[in-house]
Amino acid sequence: MSPTYDVIVIGLGGMGSAAAHHLSAGGARVLGLEKFGPVHNRGSSHGGSRITRQSYFEDPAYVPLLLRAYELYDDLHRATGREIAIRSGGVMVGHPGSLAVSGSLQSARQWDLPHELLDAKELRRRFPTFTPRDDEVALYERKAGLLRPEHTVAAHLQLATRQGADLHFEEPMTRWEPYRDGVRVHTAENTYTAGQLVVCPGAWAPQLLTDLGVPFTIERQVMYWFQPKNGVEPFLPGNHPIYIWEDSQGAQVYGFPAIDGPALGAKVAFFSKGEVTTPETIDRTVYDHEVQDMADHMSRCIPDLPGTFLNAATCMYSSTPDENFVIARHPAHPDSVTVACGFSGHGFKFVPVVGEILADLALTGTTEHPIGLFDPARLAAAPAPA
Ligand SMILES: Cc1cc2nc3c(=O)[nH]c(=O)nc-3n(C[C@H](O)[C@H](O)[C@H](O)COP(=O)(O)OP(=O)(O)OC[C@H]3O[C@@H](n4cnc5c(N)ncnc54)[C@H](O)[C@@H]3O)c2cc1C
Picture 1: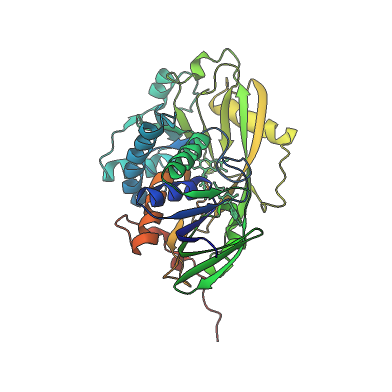
Picture 2 (picture 1 turned 90 degrees about the horizontal axis):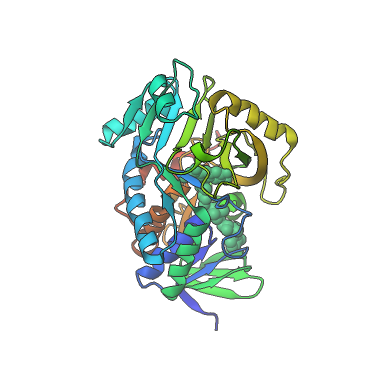
C-alpha cells in the first residue's frame, strides 16, 4: 500500500519549505518531494541575501502581506535561533518620478509606513558611499533590510521535520493525476496518494503547470560580489543600507551591505537584465563583459563599490507578464490542487506568508489574506476567435 498523506508539497525551495512548515504546524500529515538536496543552489532561493522592505513600489496591495511576512520571519528566527533577517534600513533612489521613489512613496503614504524622503545632499551626507545626481532623491525606510534565503529554507525544513512532515530529497515528482477525492503522485521510486497537492515549482513551472494557462518567462539573472576600493568599513552592516537605484531609463540595480565579513565583499545585481532560459539550459558561466558592465554601471552610483571583482553566481526568475505572483487553487483542479509560482524576481520577502496562504488554501479552500492580485485568470490566454 502506498503511504497516504493529507497534503503532498512539490518543491521544497522558498515557497514549498514554508508550505511544509505551515501545513505540518496545523497538524496535517505532509509529504514534501524535492528534486535536489535540501537548500540547493540550482533554483531561485540561493545567493546569501534577498532584499525585504514594506513601502512596496510594485503595488500597495502587497503591503498587508509584507506586514504579516515580517511577523512570521521574526517567529521563524525565534523558533530556530537562526539569523534570518538583518534590518539594515534601505533606500530607494531615483528621479522623484521614478517607480522606485514614487511607487514606494505611494505605498508608504497609503499604509502609513515609517519613511523619510532624502534629497541628494542628505543622501550623500547619511550614506557617503552614494553619489546621486543633484536631481535624484531617495525614500529611506528603516524597516527595510535583507533576508538570508538559505537560512530561511533550512529553518522551514527543520520545523517541518520536527512537526512530523516526511521530506524526501533527490526524489522529483515525475507526474501526478486525480485519484479518488484527491491526487496520486509518481516518482521514479514510488507512488503516493493524498487529499491535496501543493505545487511550488519555481523555474520548473512551465513544465509542471502546463495546464495553468500562464505564460511564464524563465530568466537567467546574475549576482556580483565586489571588494570595495578605499576599505570595506563604510559597506559593513550598521553603516550601509540595502538600496534599489533606478536610472532615467527605468533600469534598476540593487545591492546589500557587506554582510559576510570584510573579506567577502558586497553583493550587487541588476533587477532585470536577464536572458530567457530554462532550468536545463541555463548558462552558469558569468562572462568578463557582464562583470565590466556591472562595474561601469556602479561607478556612477557607488563608485567605491566596484573595486576588485570577487565572485558571481546565476539564479532564475520565473516571471509572469505583469510581474505579479500566481497563488491560487488550480483552475482546472479547484478541489485538490493549489499552486504558488511566477514570483517574478521579488517573491522571497513573502516566503512565510505564502506558506501560510498555501496551508489555508490546501486545508480550507480559502484564505483571509488578500490574494486577488494573484489570480491566474488575469493571465489566461484569450480564447482563439471562432
Ligand atoms: C538573483 C535573484 C535575486 C532575487 N532577489 C530578490 C530580492 O531581493 N527580494 C525578494 O523578495 N525576492 C528576490 N528574488 C526572488 C525570490 O528569490 C524568488 O521569488 C523565490 O526564491 C522563489 O521561490 P520558489 O519556491 O518559487 O522557487 P525555488 O526556491 O527555486 O523552489 C522551487 C523548487 O521546486 C523544485 N522542483 C522543481 N521541479 C520539481 C519536481 N518535479 N519535483 C520535486 N521538486 C521539484 C526545485 O528543485 C526547487 O527546489 C530573487 C531571485 C533571484 C534569482
